[in-house]
Image (cartoon, rainbow, N blue to C red; front, side, top):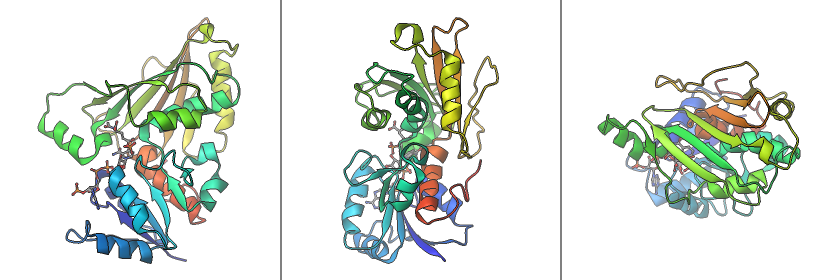
Length: 307
Ligand SMILES: NC(=O)C1=CN([C@@H]2O[C@H](COP(=O)(O)OP(=O)(O)OC[C@H]3O[C@@H](n4cnc5c(N)ncnc54)[C@H](OP(=O)(O)O)[C@@H]3O)[C@@H](O)[C@H]2O)C=CC1
Ligand SMILES: CC(=O)N[C@@H](CCC(=O)OP(=O)(O)O)C(=O)O
């Protein structure tokens, strides 16, 4: 059976990578509008009403408009934008956290943000297991490759080769806070310090955990083993256990749909650093959209993904 998939925003950064992952696959027939038609409301509405699935790779306002255009059609939607991540009637597209069956049955799936993918992968299972407190004021320190900001930020970094590090989100109201708080089950939104580095893709998301100050008794190794258990059987998520002195992001990073997790602990167990490494355009965006699409279409979860 072939499923027709409309990629709305196929000319953008996330859209292009979804097209790359899907176009070699015979299970999907892609609907992509040409340069003249791609922003035409009529052409887009027709595509929504013709397709089995649609993936929205659009800014938030255009994604909301797209969902309205699709009303009355049979199309099932995966939205890569921030528009519907905590909206009623939408399933959060993080199969490892919400369950594969929930995604498979959904008609409206919202892809997680790239930073929340790292944060939630580390924190949500540990809060659920009662190993980290739900009411702790967590902090998140993260760096992303510049493709995380789409075409505009790619252009900026390619035009200005002199930026070594860009701290941002300095108004402390980043759009990812709501989903981080909601899906980790936290009382408080985390304090989030994101930054961009002069690499095209890749990110490290770190959550420092002052265990000795927390009202819990778990050691770093207990936290790590809980994550190992939680992700048992996952082809995309790996919880590492090798000792390391450093983690590197490379400017030459190739596309990847993996999510790698570490728990680094102080020798006396008083502190830990939870760290996630991923490709913002892989498990952080396009890979996650394809993972959800696979489940919705009844196909193997990791088909077409690079592990
Ligand atoms: N980049 C990343 O790592 C991640 C991105 N996302 C999210 O994915 C979505 C897409 O982001 P990204 O690919 O980075 O952004 P880009 O800016 O690279 O691409 C967005 C695309 O949408 C097109 N577009 C804008 N408005 C409309 C419209 N009304 N109708 C049709 N097409 C339109 C743009 O056209 P034009 O080419 O003319 O500008 C562009 O091609 C965003 O919501 C983003 O937040 C989520 C996770 C990670
Ligand atoms: C480096 C950079 O600018 N990153 C983006 C987030 C990318 C992402 O996750 O996209 P969503 O907008 O769909 O959440 C930002 O911080 O706004």
